[in-house]
Structure formats: structure tokens, C-alpha cells
Image 1: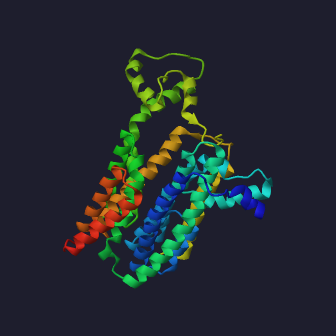
Image 2 (image 1 turned 30 degrees about the horizontal axis):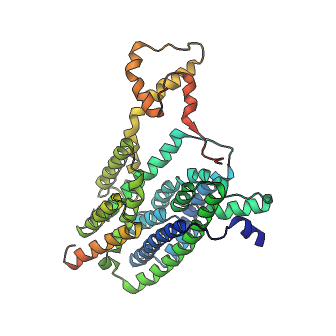
Image 3 (image 1 turned 180 degrees about the horizontal axis):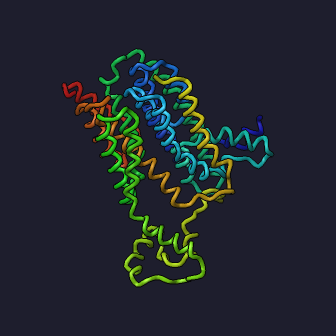
Length: 291
Length: 103
């Protein structure tokens, strides 16, 4: 066991900037954890609900979403569905940090590290890990951030539960606006392209407009209809699929009218090569196996 | 109501999403289009969640104090203010507005 920790939980990072940044994020998450615990209990849920969610799910956004759905009167099924959809992003995250959530010292240690490390995958830990160069620095960042946030998050939720039980009216302290503020702060940096902005804006309008009409939780899932704004990519995809389908028999049968649409394909690809069937491979990107 | 079974179900699904990546390490490639779809879906949910949580309570309007606090937080976040500042500003603005009698 000692070897396990020595090989996989690295010594404190020398990089003071990294520690400071992790500390700042930890502080923010701590505030959110306190308000999550307080709001859940003040809203009428038993104390063990936020505590169990924090230990077992350990994904702030989905915990807040699930509790929000339930407190708004939604069914547990809608709560689980909303939380689960939010957490699908953890799958590509897992691929991205797979090289630091493993061990070279035998299968037992490898599995232990995988089982423990997987649970520590969060937006923050992955962001810190991917910002480092070199595998050992990525490993240090991931595990330092992951372990620190797990401790901070669970302790702060416990504090919040105690606070919520004592205060009763957490709204007087504005704690109810910390939830949406955190969601916004997490989402704003990812609103990079015009297509995402359009999809997210549409989704938000759909969700708010449907809230008075549908049971809680469903408007949030309906917001995924905002993905439909990405339809502009479909003609390009169809053209390429049909070209692949026809294979090598008709190498290049582009009609002159296609030229007017090539810009669209190039835009989806992110490179200038939207023509031949071979370009389909450019669309695939290896996420794992990063060196 | 949030039964233990629902918590365990969400925990199991979440862990499955987390564990699959390290398990498949190096043996799978995710098409860029699929990865974009995951990322966009998460962004849409976060923004929709922020909008509904800021503007609505139950099936109705939440009052002005909460969206005002969230708006200030959004401006601060867009200007890359530190995370704790963003969160505390939201709570402070909302609490002060309520103190002043704004619902």
C-alpha cells in the first residue's frame, strides 16, 4: 500500500503557481459546497441527501441540477436524467487523462489507481492536468487537484448542511443565486464558437419558456433541442458520406454546383481540404494515448 | 423526494462515464464530431440550468434579486474575475437587493 501511494500520489508540486491556483479553485468550490448543502437542507431534503450525493456522485454541477429538479417538484427520474446528461462529458475527460490514471507497477496497482482516480475526474482536475506539459507534471496536477477537491467538497457540503439546518432562510444571504452563478462561470469559457453560442442561447430560451408548462426537470432536457441549431453541418456530412459510399469507383464526380458549397465543408473540418473521400479520416482525433 | 436509489443510480451512471475512459486507454478514438457533441450538450445544459435557476422558482418567476446577482456574476466571469469573487458577488448582490426590499 505504501508503494501505491508513493508511486501514484506524487509529492507536493514544487510549482507554487499550481498550488495557488488549485487553492483558489478549492476556495470557490468550498463556497459552492457550503451553499449546496445549505440550500438542499433549507429546501426540505434530509441531511444525508446532499452528503451522499457529494461522496458518491462527486460532480457539483449534476448534484446541483439533481437537487434543483427535486426541490422544484420534479421526479427523481428527471433528477437522475438531468444529472446523468450533464456528466456525459466525464467520458471524454476520462480519455484525456487516462495516461495519469494508471500505474506501471502491476495489474493490482493499475486497477486500484484506475478505480480511485476515475472517481476524482472533475472539470477542474482535468483542466489543471491538461494545462501541464509532461506526464509527471500532469500526474501531479491531476492527483493534487483531485484529492484536494474531494476533501474540500465533502467537508464544505457537511458545513453547509449544518449551516442550512441552523439558518432556515438561506435566501436572505443570497445563497440561491450562487448555483446559477457557478453554472454560468463554468459555461462561459466554453462558449467559444458562434454555433455553440447559438445552440446554448436557443436551449436556454427553450428551457425558460417551458418551465411554467412542464414538470420540473423536463425543460432542462428539452434545452438539448438547442443542438438542432447545428443543422448547417448536415449537408456537408451527407455529401461526404455519400461520396464514401460510392467508394473509389467514381473518384471525383463533383458537379460544378458543389464548388459553391465547399466553404461549408471546409468550415466543418477546420482545414482547407473538404474534397476527397480520404478527408473523412481527418475528422477522427485520438484523445487517449497522449504522451 | 430524493430516494437513496436515485442517488445510487446517478452515482453509478456518473462513475461509468468516468471509468470508461481510463479503461479504454489508448484502445479507442473518439470521432471529433462526437466529442464536439458531448461538449456542446454539456455547455447547453449548463447555460439552460443557469437561465432556469436564475429566472424561475417552481413554475413561476423568481423575482429580480436573484437574476440581478447572477447577471453581475456573469459579467465578472466574462471579465475573467477569480471564481470565488464571481460566486461571492452573486450572493452579495442578491442579499443586498433583498435587504433593500427587492423580492
